Image (cartoon, rainbow, N blue to C red; front, side, top):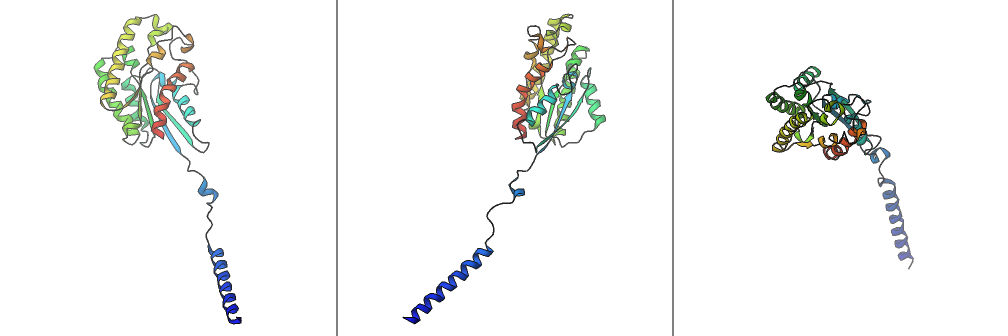
Length: 242
């Protein structure tokens, strides 16, 4: 009986020692605060175009690329950053934009690129064949800025300035007809090459009915119009970044 108790006591002692050793060496199951933090994103956006991209007659934060950036930021965490570069100027044709991009020589590591160009080709009576050639060249250049990933490009249609007080002073019907030709070409090219295309022209064609869609210069889109542009562009931009 005494021998049995000694064996039992020894077994208990060995068990307690084994448990203590395992308890002291068992790794913690919880992760550190650093490991729990999600990795932040640093997104780079670039917008290519003319007055409709630079935001003629509206504030810097009111133009559509800036509103797009702010809308994206609102859907991400504070740790995520969005940097926006714009290559655009009022009055630029496709030729001007091509030369400006070449001079700026931007890097090819952007996460998203928008392209809106062509209205000044029409306004300055440039041959339509020039737009056909240079639009394709600009698309290819834009794609190169996002590392050759064509899915990261968003082409935006040309607004119709015929539906502004300025446009009404000219041959409005001719303006709309010619811009439709430009937009149809761009839209068909994008469809044939599986590129993202956002049609916003109809928004600007409400400019005479809703004057709040026209800037104070009576020609360019207003902040409200750009907000409506972004409402259509944003879903595609989110798909690209996510």
